[in-house]
Length: 108
Image (cartoon, rainbow, N blue to C red; front, top):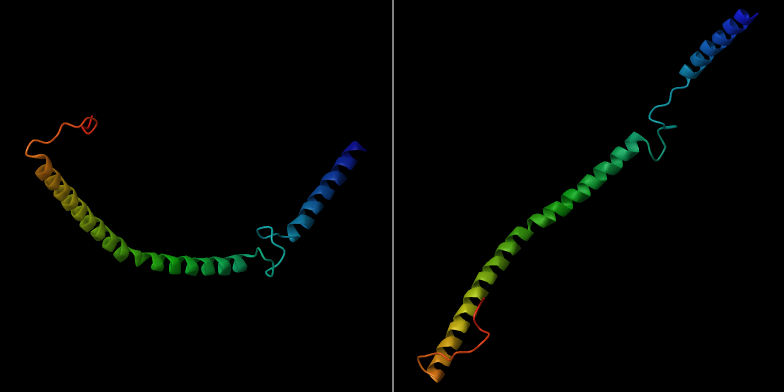
């Protein structure tokens, strides 16, 4: 009796596995119209890639502006250096050849 019960149990188990094999699930999706289907996600990815390419192409134009700004920084640095030299020359003319000893101006 126990052997007959085990034979029936395993036959039912095998039939149940065949029944489950008929219902295939592809990536957990129910149908192609699902918002998570691979074709919808691929379409969304292609749109996102196009938007990112447009933004990157806008950034490539910034290279010229950065070069212009760096040239302006060099020019401004030269102007500030000339202004400091002119101020030092003017103060030396007022004070004489020997500069005054001022505390706190020496670098450590």
